[in-house]
Image 1 (cartoon, rainbow, N blue to C red):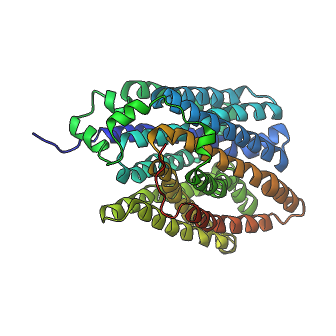
Image 2: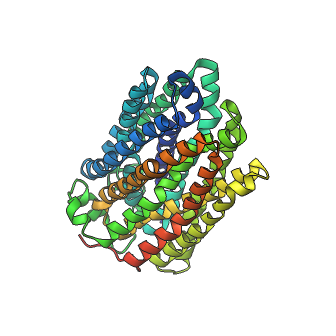
Image 3: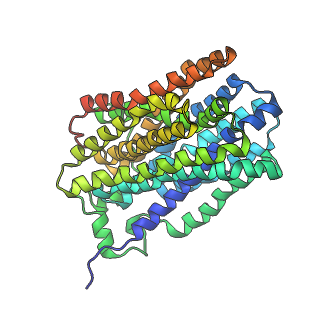
Length: 434
């Protein structure tokens, strides 16, 4: 008799990897068409920032409700409905004929895309033992990088060949293919007939979790008020509040940085943007591998997680020199931004995993949604208070590089601040009993 665990859980990881790839592909399209849309709709930086803010506000609201809904519906149907709605919203960008219309469809996209991460994190909690969760999260989260790589290598060329509307139609339609695969291949472990008994036992091998618990908890309700009463919720939420805006900054403003600093437009930005996110893919995957190795060396889970996150927080700091090095050579700036993005993704793989480290499966979706909402609110505030005024002001006096100097310093310090606050709130990341 062969008791070696199988590998079907990695098929599930592949599914949520592709969902995350599509999620980021759909949201990245507009940043790559900024110059084209600015010319067509007579936008300025404030208009673009307002559209970005509309997306983020809707994403914040969506995260709060999506986590709750997914905990009630379960991962299979929660993920399905979320992906269906965001794919429809992405395609509907092609029907827009006004700046206001873009605000509406971006809001719809933000509201529906919010379901991806609560669904994905809950899926990982259901399908992986704790020692593998950061690695699985790093792998699926690297889909964000792949989506951001695929976008610059396809969207500008589609827009040149067939027009910007077709860029939204083609990228948005990919989600419908994923929906079919999800319905065919996904079910929770206890109901998945393709799963072997040894692998099921391995998935449920954590001493504090069992398959019975996983079955009984699907559909159970834990109130937001109760969850907000835990320091563990606030540690995750504040960590997301301080660091999520940095990733949004890369996603929405990197093409503009390359254009304003180096004159790159259209298809010329494809290679440098793709390189940034290619580098960040390495960090996403390795970010989950390091704590796994430390846990295998008998480190406590909390110590392995926190040590890894501290290393990644320090790895972001060199971005403060991005502008200075970029004055010497553009590719030096691109590489150092790529390294910072890589460190962010390594951090992200672990901060997401702290939720399933500290909370039972029945609360994972809701806590992920609450923290994600805080991260999105932080992004909105950064756009409103800093980027919108900062970039408009310095572009008006022809010193846009000063705005990027300031933003890169913000990026460099955010993670260490987040780590310190999280450490003060939950020194040993004690699991919550609900």
